[in-house]
Length: 260
Image 1 (cartoon, rainbow, N blue to C red):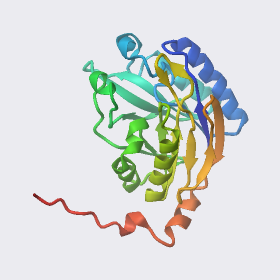
Image 2: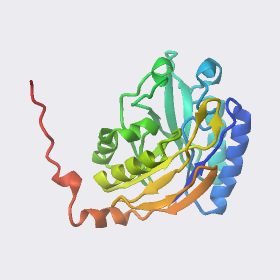
Image 3: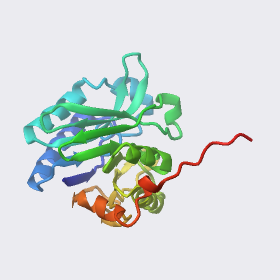
Image 4: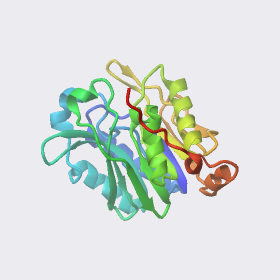
């Protein structure tokens, strides 16, 4: 699998401009020979849109997802991006949508670990998301999920080989973000990619530093704090090589709960 991380600086609240940028990013991904293009959390609306969520949130069949699906099919490219999703019952979720190279939506994940103001606007997701694709078994999480080892462990125990985390993380968290991404990869002996965003939205200053870590926790590629892209080749055989000496998931003995 050749993976392209797009560390974007979306125009806050301007969906049309961000979709136009997505079209250019798809072209760049194809030119780089990428199989999968991944964008940050809420990449097509901007993250700091809480006061405009009623206006900007869409169902998964709405115009944003439809245009993204058209681009994925046009370029025969897998595409993962964040969306402020309106559920059928009116609730809002911070979601990640995975579309395959035919333009079919093959997975939707709802952020489980909500951060700060998100609690007031979004409903927390309940389920983990691992999807089998021709590229491998992909696990999805979003931003703050990456700070909880339990989330990545649940994805890994369900067979995820590559965990993808669209993110909107802020200054001064770049060092912590890298450490946590590497730890999630090492703990579960799989690949973990953190796809952060760049730029500023009002009082929020994003720290960039998107990276991908391999099954032994090594950094396979990392960006700085400016907008840009990173292309990394993923060799899934490295997972078996990492687990040949010790296999954490196989050797794990869960600690039983005890009453006080």
